[in-house]
Image (cartoon, rainbow, N blue to C red; front, side, top):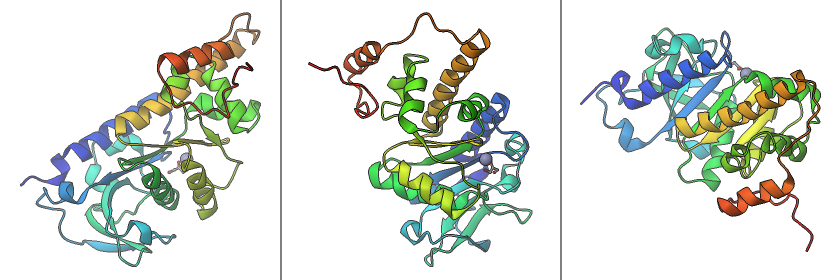
Length: 276
Ligand code: 2HA
Ligand code: ZN
């Protein structure tokens, strides 16, 4: 039996949070990640079988009772997680009462899960209902996406189409598009409920003037979704810096060609269908 600190899960979370920090998307204590660990995976370790303490949460997560999540801590800095995983992250099990979690590993200086944990849990519930392989919820502050929410309409369809048209990979990686919700106070059940409602259809939800909430089956895939959208947003910003006038563009026909070529399950509401 090995120790949890040596696991692929702790290593993966350390690597991805370092990566996010190096992108410049998680300044200070910005950002949070939760990673579902399956029962048989938890059972492999010698030091994850005992409840260390019980921590109340601000949301009834009864639907997730018994599930384990490796989660970043409130107030912790992504730049430190790789060096201090047992302090800055914790493995928690949702208690049967739904309104608290049992700490099984980590948070060894008295820490607690991220302030966005209710939003994470609500999003896990929404994604698990549509994706049996759902594992990750990731939140960060990608600069160009956030900047676009100050200059572009906060409308899911038009925002998606702008992102899709900045690079051919956009529609390939996020064929369902992305959701944009109104600005709301972070760390609240209200923003969690609004986000989770959108997660029934979308893996990515933009929080205006703040950041991104994304869901996926693996750390790589979830980070990849965010990186792809942020790349398109960077191209958009760069076009504005070059004067903003586009004399060439990716057309609706070009988007439809991508859908056909890669057989994409594209969101038809966001894709103009050619009139016969
Ligand atoms: O965890 O990013 O939205 C800090 C945040 C809150
Ligand atoms: Zn944030």
